[in-house]
Length: 344
Image 1: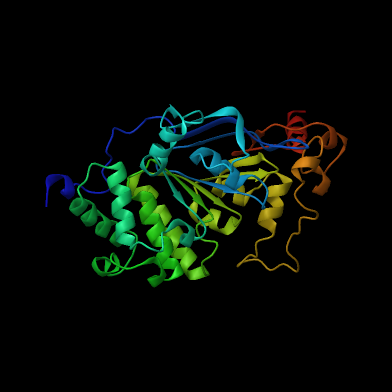
Image 2: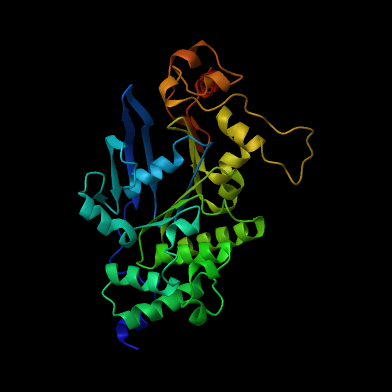
């Protein structure tokens, strides 16, 4: 075995960047149509530190996956970043040419998607896919990449990796395929991983194994992760901080424990109230009436006000910005009145 092959796969190739691994500033994503421009992401700010998992949660249509797609440069053909800046490890990436962006995918930014079959080539063995990905991004021979591929499969919990490396995706169970996808996302040692609904298609027991694996990967490797999901339970078990999105904006942001214990935005309260409790008995779970607004019919003021029981005239006419709410930030006018009342 060469000296290069003997290096641990957990060792960083370059000196770590001291700032946030991902820094999103005032991101705006638009979709031009024949009837006008639809704004899907409306000026969001996010950052993720080394070894941190940031959960991004919300209903379908909130803009979670679109945010991840904007970061990794995989917006649909009609979509465009209309404003804002995206930095990864200190480098601005939102204006990179396509060829430069392709170099970043895999090497600097890894991706884990909901359906592993869409991420794996059914005509190639999992070993070939891992080896080719590593050889594209790392200065390794085929033999060295093969050795590292076996180590990676073992790290993500694939039994008998020396045998499974020569098998095809259809020969793996759903949970094992997702482990292979995680290995594929990590094989070039990226600094940031975008995980979009990585546990949704799996049963509960496998979900728990995958979330534990993601946590261990970030802790051991120092990888920053954006975990996109609609499941607040997965966020509670996995993430360090959480960003709650609604209608293309962040409505609450802060440490997971603080937000789970004391959610401040009415929408966050509804999401958490809809989760059954194992310790407290309740006759009925919280229900958020109505639906997410369409992009071509966005309400004025706070976008959540048509579904909010606390909404008043100010909520209907003025859009609140994120403001301090205990340990977190929340965009709600009622919080400002609470603070003003305390000061009085």
